Amino acid sequence: MTRVYLSPPDVGPADRQALLDAFDSNWIAPLGPDVDAFEAEAAAFVGVAAGAALSSGTAGLHLALAALGVGPGDCVVVPTLTFVATAAAATYLGARPIFLDSEQASWNLDPDLLEDLLATRARAGSLPAAVVGVDLYGQCANWERLEETCHRFAVPLVEDAAEGLGASCVGRRAGAFGRASVLSFNGNKIITTSGGGMVLSDEPALVQRVRHLATQARLPAAHYEHDEVGYNYRLSNLLAALGRSQLRSLEAKVARRRALRARYEEGLADLAGLAFAPVAPWGEPTHWLTCVTLDEEVFGAGPETVRLALEAADIEARPAWKPLHLQRAFAGAEVLGGAVAEHVFTQGLCLPSGSSLSTSDQDRVIEIVRSVAARRPSSPDRS
Image 1: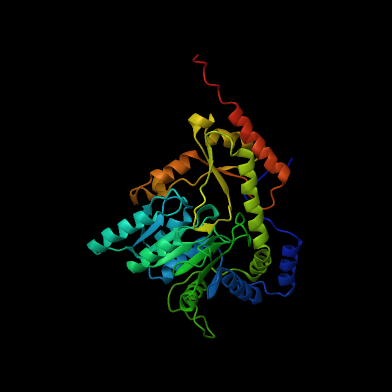
Image 2: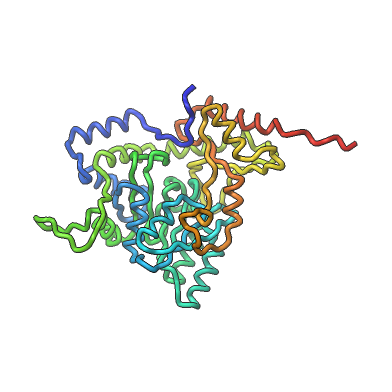
């Protein structure tokens, strides 16, 4: 049997042909008709005005914050339960992250904690330069509340939708919230350009600022003229062609991941001590990754025991994100709360969730998880 990966690329003949067509057109550089079209098509899908295609989602976070004026000495609020890039991008600009805990309803940034923090800092005259929220594991944050709070305190809001493309919140698509949003097309994401990302916004001037910074801040002159130091962050036309093809199959990939989550629930929901990641009432997640929590005392084994049992069968599973306030890279950073995120980390496990996962391989995952639960010692007879 071949190895089962957590979330591998799901590509096919149409994607291969799109790459070949772009290659044959000789548009190989980080500009070209497929870059322009990919930006327009992604923006139209999400429902915003414009987009700038970049080399990674991390580059997108970096430039979105830069375009909003974040700089040395500033503070940027980020959730502690997320991938490291969300906070690292702020540090690239000389800013310091402030970590906030998750809410139980979605595992995303807690709006109550954000409101408390902004109110406290407003009284002290030290509001953060930006807030970054995340669509964790394919579920939108509570964007209505986050947008209202940030608007009230006049703090720019950025949506890190790297894990959320295809999800929705109160009828709006992931990527449509905040002053700017950021997508990722990394190889493990719901659609991929191998490596790549995009900044989206309803403010064309902000997107143009991102595009300028991403092209070494080069001015339109016959010679190479630069008004500031920029970055080499643009996406290649070849990869944009792949992204356009992948975008056409996004809805089918989302439907498949939702079906995988439903089938996992059917096969595992009866196990005592196992719970699935919550689904918040304000939207529809993609279930980019299907995540469970395991109460070791009740289930009879912790997430690491289950992960190793799957690994022994050549099946990849992964712990939930380790909260960033527990990471040595951010030692000493300010943090509000943390108990919810720490609980998800200590008890969480992400199961194989790729849209190309076969029914037989998913059956193997379910069987192994159930077999670990079956090893739970029986309660002693107290009669």
